Length: 268
Image 1 (tube, rainbow, N blue to C red):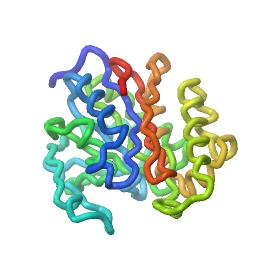
Image 2 (image 1 turned 135 degrees about the vertical axis):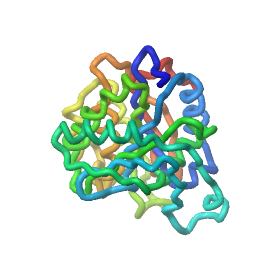
Image 3 (image 1 turned 90 degrees about the horizontal axis):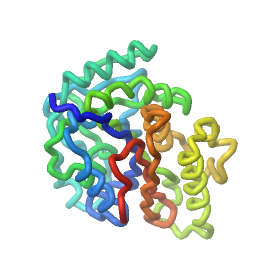
Image 4 (image 1 turned 60 degrees about the vertical axis):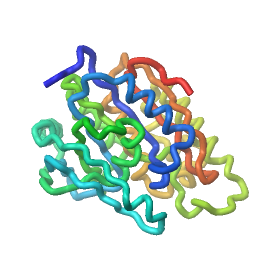
């Protein structure tokens, strides 16, 4: 196995809507630059809100299909494929680490890659030549639980595994593509999260629903925020933090993302 001399980074990536696969906007080129700066990855592990289960499941399909788990979008999206191989061996290692940390874990040998995984990876790793496997998000996950998941998975970074929490920094689908009178609330929330991440204020990130401005509006439900805590948990105390400014899509979906231990800061 080609393992890098330094640990692989951890990332939180905002995947927004499935249209991000066709419309890279501000974030797509930056993810491409991050991907080009990474070398020797053994695999990419993705935790996405689009695979929620009772307990934790780990994908061990050696050839995971591309799942088009959405509707109401252009036909061109359904033609896209992301034929990356899986990595059953590292998937089993992830399952062992999570089990040791106290999670109820099972393996899923037929699961494909949902759009929370393959949509951002089309920009980050467009050649689909790096093995990819997913770890599910428990239905009853809390911010503290998501952080513990990341902490449990952190040792895989030394094995050359890029740990990716894929969500959306804001995710109010009721306001998606609607004429929102005060969309600036989403930027206020995104800025608050960025300040907390860069300040390494994990307690604030855990308690965001009480501390962050417009938290309940930015995230009526928590599943798209929780992958951020997975990435934070997988980070070390010494990892440099990088805000990857992604702008807003559809006025209220922040595409801001964060890198933990990136080899070099991305440029615009």
